[in-house]
Amino acid sequence: MDGMDVKDGKDRTDRTDRERAVRRDAAVRAAVDQGLLGPGSPLVGLLDVTGVRESAAALRAAFEAVTAPGTPVLHAFAVKATPLVPVLRLLHEEGLGAEVASPGELALARAAGVPSARTVLDSPAKTPAELREALELGIAVNADSPQELARVDALVGPATPRSPLGIRVNPQVGGGSIEALSTATATSKFGVGLRDEGAREWVVRAYLDRPWLTRLHAHTGSQGIPLPLMAQGVAQTYALAEEINARVGRRQIDTLDIGGGLPVNFGSEATAPTYAQYARLLGETVPGLFDGRYGLVTEFGRSLLAKHGTVVARVEYTKSAGGRPVAVTHAGVQVATRTVYVPEAWPLRLAAYDAEGRPKTGPEVVQDVAGPACFAGDLLAEGRALAPLEPGDHVAALDTGAYCFAHHYAYNSLPRPGIHGFAPDGSGGIAFATVREPQTVREIVAEAGQAHASALTALRAPERA
Ligand SMILES: *Cc1c(COP(=O)(O)O)cnc(C)c1O
Image 1 (cartoon, rainbow, N blue to C red):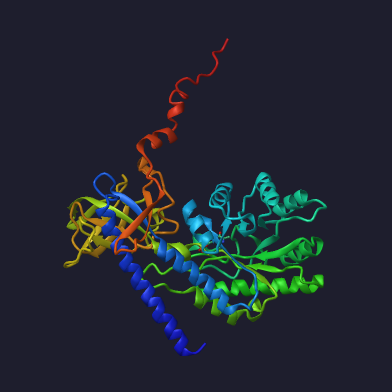
Image 2: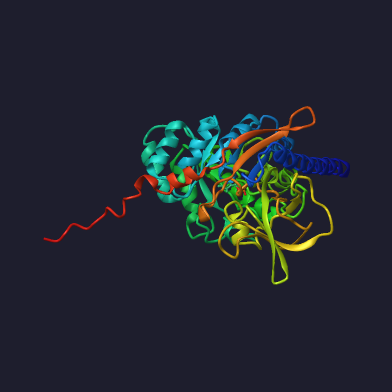
């Protein structure tokens, strides 16, 4: 690819990013206008349907550009990033499948209509019942450990399984900047650590003994892993597949599952890195990967959804403490759990809007933006320069479409906010669709054991004779 193409690609990306910001502003304004956001509903999640479609298309195009014609590629969205049925249906319509890691996630994918043949089950703790269900449905399964493979053996028996089956390996190429999300460290809990004594030979033997093991899987990490390290993880996995196929003497492994993990830029509007950059880097680092001999599975999550979600909260009060202005809002630990507990690793961009939902300008003031929860650390941002916030204004937490607004944390019995998808309505306005209803106080009480209110007071040890 010459410099000109790269520049064209970059210009296009910049325009996409700018247009997304414009749509977001319009959506916040419309949410206030249409009453989705107001004194009675001070917190909502907004999801940019146009943006999600664009990211899905960019992912498909990036791999189409580098793979040999006819190469089967399944992009399985990592459901844990945004576990919402309408989102899975939207992505299914955009040609993506689903990567699931629990019975709940599998049920969500099925409710969304994702076919079994486009679903992949990975999890480090699959029960026998989960494995049986997956094998009955023909869902692809990656065994995480020797013990799990033994369970799969027992279920498969002498038959030829319907499900494509593989083993997850850990190339142990090292971690990134966020320890909790680094899955390829020496001691990671995931997969079979390839550099451990005897492990590589065990994996090779596992394939020699089981002609039905046709896939090999690795997911080298999520947010915080540098691209070259991700590509190294894929390179190691590819090299192992080549070794196994050479030892077996046929192309037994026909599909490589290269995981997800493309990092998201939370520092600005720019989509960086892009799928196209990653796909090109993979092509350079692992030349044989895309030549058509292997089908591919990818499992991206955060990079498909993060930039398309916005949490918008009403400012309830403002105050000043120790000389620092504080805006007390309705968004905190319940929707941005990682940011609140590990702010250094998960900083969020914030945007200020006025009471009508218009971008708020004016000389910026360094202020804290606090959430509603009753502990001092419940801050969306500390010492952030923003237009001066007043009661009735709104604060938006940007890039919160993945691992955030759908990941409610029930602290202080705060309700799950409603989530609304939005798209241009064709006549200059914004149309909304409910993705998830807001949780009601009645539901909170029911889920907190209302039906068992007397369970503890009625429980008595039998009287001694
Ligand atoms: C979490 C996870 C993913 C998705 O990671 P992202 O960083 O969201 O792209 C993919 N595969 C596996 C096995 C995972 O655990």
